[in-house]
Every structure is written in structure tokens, then in C-alpha cells.
Length: 280
Image (cartoon, rainbow, N blue to C red; front, side, top):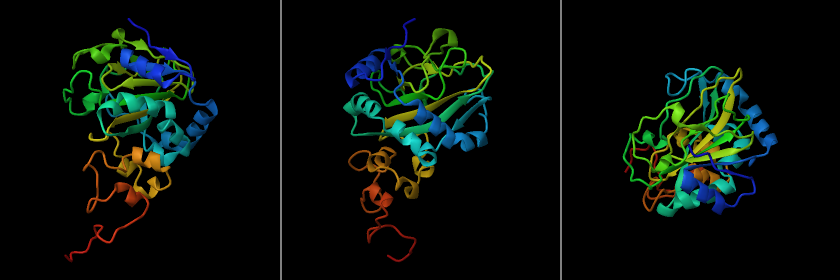
């Protein structure tokens, strides 16, 4: 079984892109300062504590998934828009689409004793649509809030499996753990076979999962509810547009009479904007 490619935090976008295209996954070690990760954890602690465990074996009966991260912590913003990540996505996703957008934002906390997740492809979320092989429609990052070890449930991947046929049924034994120190990030394609690892330790393991997808596909996490305009107004403009407040292509995503959706974020309401009036 091939190992997960590993790069240092000063890696070039060329190196990250090459590893991602070749193996479908790559770890960049210690890319985020541990202090930032700790502040993010502090911000999210009340929300994590209030999050219920999953409702089935796939989401994890002892796993908690806490979303709406753009609205809940400014410490998350630099992760969502990290320059190395976005520069890589500009090539891996942006080479065959007008733009891409945030797909989901969540902390995944795998509790002690949780078994391994079903091995899957994230792009199956699009109703199992058979995208052409090699046509990548999404890419994910997993930022380590704790050291990721094989014992505590590090994400498990099958390097190179982004080239395999679809709808295969793989097992934990077919995978390898993407171990990495706190502050590191795993990038992996939506076509890569992977799954959360079994947590055989005595403590929970936390990671920040941020997904990105082509702008003409529906987001897994509804960002317009998770981060509505009155909240998105506080975001840097590039990040608000990344969340989905922009056109996804020539005529996709406008509002009213062909207005730019970012106008609504800025609080601009043109005279011909929609209203609740019944008058013509």
C-alpha cells in the first residue's frame, strides 16, 4: 500500500498540486500555528458541547459534527481561505470551472471507542452521480486540532484510489492512516476513497473539515443559512464570495433582476430589488 505524501509547511503550490494529483491526498505538516488552533477550539467549545452525536453508523454514533464555522469563530477564517490551499484549488478545481465555493465547514470529533467509518468517496453526496474519471468536482481539507495518530482515529485514505472505478466497497484494512501533528492539514480529492479511523484511545480526536466544490454544484452545508448576509457582511469580501455570495458562472446565483449576490451582503438594495409588496 502506498504511503501518504508529506510536505513541510514551506512547500510550494507546485509540490502540493503534484502530490494531490498523483496520490489524491497529501499532508502538509504544521501549516497552522498551534496557538490559532487552540483559540479556535476555545471559540467553538460551547458549540461542540451542545452538538449531539451522529444518528447512524456513517455519521458516527459517538462522533459529533459541529458546523457553521464561519459564523462561530473568526479564528476559522484563515483556515477556510489559507493561501496555499486556495492556490492549490485554483489549479485542481479551477482548471475546469469558472469558480469554486465552500462546500462544508465542520469540526469532526471522533469519540473514544468509535469504530472506523465506512470507506467512501465524498463526491457520492451528489446523489452518486457518475462524474467522469479525472474530472474533480470537490476537494477537502482536514486540519488537525489534536495530533492525529493511528490509535485515536486519524483519517484513513487509499492513496491513488481517486483513479479507481466508482462505487467500490473497500474496508479499513485497505486504507492507511493520515497521521499528522496538530496544526497540520490533509488535503484530499472528493474522488479519493477514505474514511474516519477507529478511535482506540481513551480521548476524543478533533479535526476541522473544510470542503470546497465547483460553484455550479449544491453545497453540502447551506452557507446562506449557516452564514446569512448579516453575518457574511463582517467577512472579508473574498471569503464571503468563497462562501457562495457570488455568481457561480455567467448566470448562476444572481438575485432579483440580475444583481450580484454580494450586493445583498453589502446591504445594498436596488430600487428594483424584490419586496413583499403585491403591487406590480
